[in-house]
Image (cartoon, rainbow, N blue to C red; front, side, top):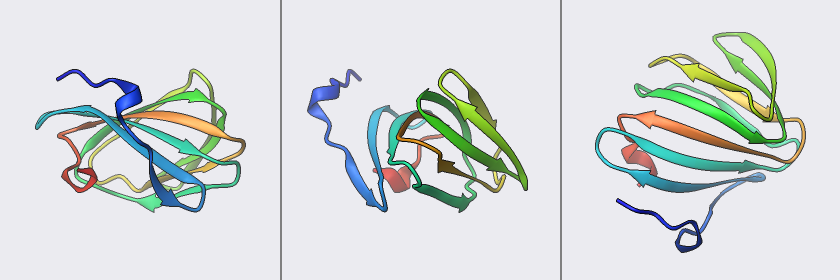
Length: 106
């Protein structure tokens, strides 16, 4: 599957958060998520493994009750069912990889 960025429209998730589902298949998914300063990716959990990379901006990232400040170039791993979420400390962009793909995003 080839995905051209200009062919995909960001989905507005509300409260300053939007996402673009990029390349995906049954085994893996790539998602770009934008956050306006102060936006929150609410604490949640899911059965998927997740790796995230901060493309720009700065976040407070919380996983299983521990918080970290992450900036451009930082990344993190989320194991299945771990409670996690982010707060954007400035306008920010993050790249998420999920395995298997998030059917609820399609």
